[in-house]
Amino acid sequence: MQLRRLVTDGFRNLVAPDLTATRFVVLHGPNAQGKTNALEAIHLVATLKPLRGRRLRDLVTWGTDRAVVSAWVEHQGVERHYRVEIGKEGRTAKLDGKRVSDLQDYFAGVRAIAFTPQDGRVVSGEPSRRRAWLDRAAFTASPAHLDRVRVYRQCLAQKAALLRSDRPDPAVLDTLDLQLVQHGAQLAHRRAEMLDELTPHIQQLHEGIAGGEGEVTLTYATRAAGDDLAARCDALAQRLSEVRGRELDRRTTLAGPQLDDVKILLDGKPARTFASRGQTRSLVLSLKLAEMVAARNRGQVPLFLIDDASSELDATRTARLVALLADLGAQVFATTTDPGPIVAALPADDTLLVGVSQGVLTAS
Ligand SMILES: Nc1ncnc2c1ncn2[C@@H]1O[C@H](COP(=O)(O)OP(=O)(O)OP(=O)(O)O)[C@@H](O)[C@H]1O
Ligand SMILES: [Mg+2]
Image (cartoon, rainbow, N blue to C red; front, side, top):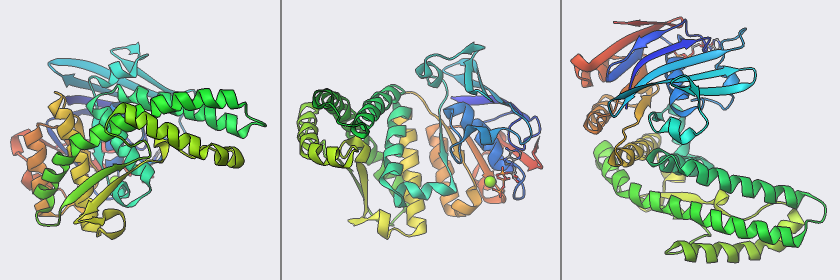
């Protein structure tokens, strides 16, 4: 997929940009000019989520009440118009002028993976960060995963509400646990499958990016363990019955794939606690690029967004990364205060340099 044109209105500090993109786009300029904001506009239209923070309304230019991002994206020979509006009533997404009712439709033609300075947390942060990465990888590979996560969350929210109520009905709790077993085991199973699919790519990419920095192993840590879906269902059912008493005492849910983790080891030691900053970065980059490879193997190559390339990557890593992305056929948007190293690694005839100054984008 390739983003051809980007237009925004009322988005952060950007002053009505209208950008015609090539395969590699480097947004450069001093600090606080709007480089990351431009990347954020692309991220919004490609993922419907903010790149930083959680609140969509922070994306709206201060003092105004509506932000619009429009992108024309070509995928498998067809160009479609994606438009996202953030207003007082929340977010509206349109595809070729029509309001989107099925998000799978929307994401069939546009997806993006971002690599930002905050992503070290995928390796060093809470398990939720790694679950989110794995869920996103499963989603990037196939948008149907969105429903799997949503249905499980709904069941879990119902059970949490019931446990908080006075004297929860045990029969209703049993029914909810049955549903949680079914949807939870499926979710865990899909995540474990996805991790199995990603692991060889991660190992190979890590070797390419970090050279001799050590060997990576990954395991999906879950109580819904088992060789197949039926075994996972049994294990999760068993676990839920074990914790039932405590759940009632504490009035909260205490088991299920919402607590799972991806254990990442570097040379046999937990990367979460032992990896250095540089090692963490190489690991994160391998995880993110593995998502790209898995999506490519299914016929789609998402956009790749790199925020603050100069602070995150030295010249050698930049060159290796660019070579990998070019091999994948990905379109790349990168921000940097120092365009030298990344520009040196990119093919001049397919690279657009965009200067960013006080929210104004100028292609050169
Ligand atoms: N909602 C908003 N409305 C208007 N301006 C905003 C909004 N949100 C952020 N800004 C401004 O946008 C400016 C540019 O932010 P951005 O993060 O894109 O800078 P940058 O060029 O990536 O800088 P750096 O090199 O430091 O990362 C900030 O100074 C901030 O004040
Ligand atoms: Mg920035």
